[in-house]
Image 1 (cartoon, one colour):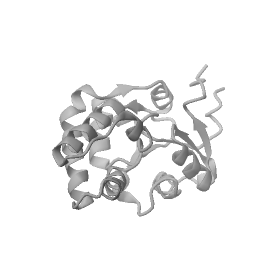
Image 2: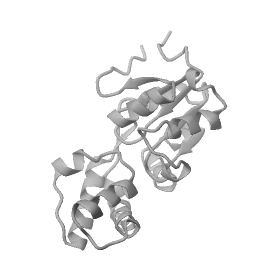
Image 3: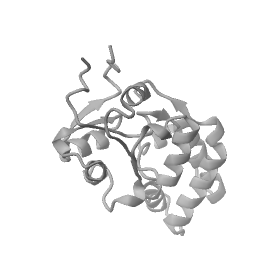
Image 4: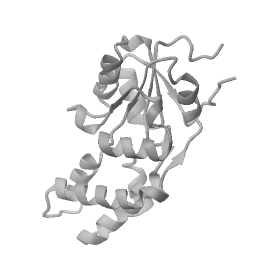
Length: 195
């Protein structure tokens, strides 16, 4: 019996948990920075990875003193990311958990990415059809570390939060799951454990 069998629903973060698109996101931010006359490096990006694009864009406008609407910056970054999508999606080991339980347990993706882009990425990775629900950045007012994303997943799956297990790779996502009253697996330090 798997350690996952005791839960009524499984909720997955996307980036860093199911797929790795960090090179594509970083490349998109580099192109965006070049477009608007500022520079970013990998160290800068690693402090923001997993944050919704608009949240990062807002912080960029403040940090670099840009006279620019963050929505314009976010839109340009998204355009660049979409252009890089073909070469920027790698399926990660915890996708095997989703494959194992597809059709057996309700499952959701709770991500800081806009749902349309998340759908495209999951389709590109061959994972989209495994999930019943995708909750993206536009579906909640408060993003991780607030619990809203995961609570919305539970609501749409019609499963009590305490009966949900979350899979995450970022501190603010772990905090969000905890705040939602859900058990959480930190995929950075845990084996898939399907045997």
